[in-house]
Image: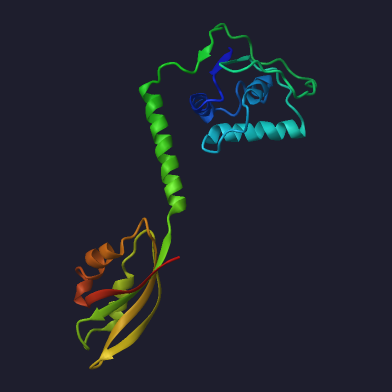
Length: 231
């Protein structure tokens, strides 16, 4: 059954090809064939990396051409909206090749520009959201923050105070070194370092919702930001 592609060197054509290759390793069948060469040759240049599936397939075909060539016959592919393609890469004949799958009774072309179903639209939206989330995660910065944690009075158990502070755990938060610093009148404050992932942890919310809220506020009177540095 032949496959039809339209205007592969346009954004629309590349998008359709990328969606087509989402669940396929090759243009047709389960091995590289002349159908892959036809589509490969129809592309005027390597596809942008934003088309993840096309780039994966393109680099794989490039590697096969450098190593051993492509011998499969394929099922037939048509490129519409592009200049005629001449096969420039000689490929070795298949050795002891076995007969491929039986002829399909349905000879209709696969039109990749047909109306999208609701399932296809939903899948495309989910893929776009996943790519966006992955990109955001890679770009997330980190910060090093030094906090002053002050007790209520000189009778506050500073060991329990520090344990209470470190008991706060969340994604993107890592507690570091600490020390007790004299304030006066026998009172000491806790200075503690923490490393945060900026997109996951808000220091203001951490202080208001956790460090100065129940039950930690039994030990902690106030928390101040001493230093805040991007890593």
